[in-house]
Figure 1: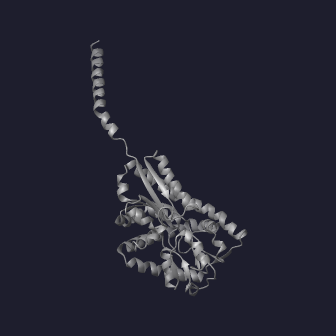
Figure 2 (figure 1 turned 90 degrees about the vertical axis):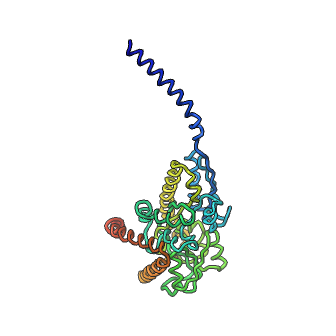
Figure 3 (figure 1 turned 90 degrees about the horizontal axis):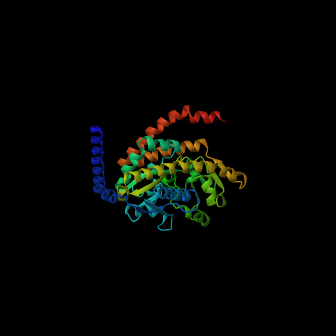
Length: 362
């Protein structure tokens, strides 16, 4: 009986203490309700096509999964700002998030284009391995932090095609005098052969070829190229895409806005970008598989493979150009050295795995 009385009195004290604690801490719990954020996102890509849909889905996923705690409204290229203004408006904080590819911002940094990939560099699988399990994201953040931005890989085109031309490309001499759209380091390589390289956003490419402003273009690959109608304005479709074997697509976030998020929302954004990185690459792969047959069988596109001799000359020149550009910037040199270290390791493994398997599958 004494023990029972002691238990009842102890329980009563605990209950009273619990009620008192609830009264004390309940206001704090109410005050600790998580903030809601509304972001404006801008894209360097137009609404139509794979990338327009994919980045819309990324924004919608973040909004939905966060239950509206982070609501993101996306404006595609030219809906709010032009394609190449995306970086500036996110850097300034006018908008909070943007989508593009690092080589679109070469005017900002000599090092930044290496993050899109290098000619004869890494494919999608290797790029993703470098970003997530190598030094890629850390190196990218070191560049983007200089512009008040947080970087995430958010997609990959996979191996691209070599470009659309209206004349045959037999030797490096055929690049001389061409007015050709090719961004990034591949464009720098063509410049060394006398090409007049023009950087145009997606919506302007076909009109520019039709009007004669440019002679040809590379865009992405069969699916995106078919959707853009490049087969209607160019005669020859060259491969392989030596200049972009696995191009990184990115999400960049204003650093002040990023730091305002709690850890749960940060993890959500990070996870959604990683999902987007994988989903965009897989969508390109399957759509390219269908599109290339359609271009060949229904539209009778004239496919041309670069000769081994020409590819070797492009490779030699690419190595020279990328080294020279990297030497102009300490960050660029650091990134290129790191990419080459991982590329060498991946190529060694690939000889025993993917390359050997693909050769055996013939």
